[in-house]
Length: 435
Ligand code: ATP
Image (cartoon, rainbow, N blue to C red):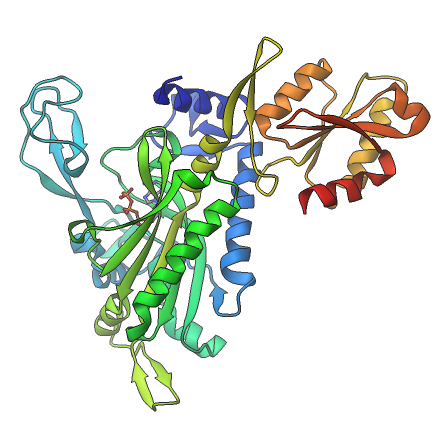
């Protein structure tokens, strides 16, 4: 199977099973924006909850926050985004196709029409603009934030005074970000509206390199903990010429997608750039008082900036498998149970003899602890296949033996092995399996 075919098949599975739809589909869609359906939103929420647990609540040195998307435009002037946040753009004079100049080889012909007639490269600012309030003049311009990080930096003083934090400490948030990308594509990989999970870790300026190393490794390990294939993950150190305008050093966590190794997350040493800029532009003091040395210092920052949607894409691509079972093709998403939208699907073998009622009772018993789902539609084989495509790790079938001995069949998704389990033991059975 070619790599582009895998992406096409994944996109169609996501639509068929209710993971992800094109936005505004009935009107022909809107390029590079996506809606998450019933299964997709569960998968996405699981990713965000695991990140929040591992980066915020399970640590004593990181707190969370949730800043507004709209911010005073001065924030983006101070941060350098108004003047620096752009990508180089070129057009093909022959077919008018538009590309990011750093994503193609300008020595070669246009990949769309095969002619070599490029315009000069020019810079294109990626921030989306709108007007805030009822007047549409230059004073009402606001930007849709291109990153969530600035909401953290401008709240630095609030966080320090209210949580009485001591260096090193981090502030984290999850939220939407918007970029008017020149070229989009590869499904969720590059869209114009996406979600970020960002954490700014404030440290003493001479400790940045050790924290950069610490967070780069911690973040790489996090993707492994979600069940993503280890050999398809790596850290890559940025070359000097790829560094963003604010960064002194950066590691990317990369995944080997069907379209090549690409960035999942950036872990960057931002130095004291952001706090210095905001202190200068706002006239406010953005320092931390070191009571040991009696000095006010401006902390340096190590940032871990991840994309929720890129993580969801990685999990889906990595889990997608096609297998041959008894001469038939089986499509299965081998999702780690931690992220799977449904953990246990419960099926009455037939819709009579009290089997649906027993199945519903099982769901009632399980649903406080597990994401349980009832499915009575179609043959049992079809129901298994549907749940394989949804990535559901376990299936429970109520059959005629259940009526006499109160046991059910539990089917494991990946091995397809089946075993009989007493109905009243199901909760502890799954708890053991998922530990
Ligand atoms: P790229 O080089 O791919 O444009 P970047 O280096 O500009 O990405 P960052 O500014 O480091 O990206 O953003 C942090 C994270 O936010 C990325 O690692 C990615 O997971 C996510 N992200 C950035 N841009 C997009 C986008 N257009 N669509 C989806 N996710 C994105």
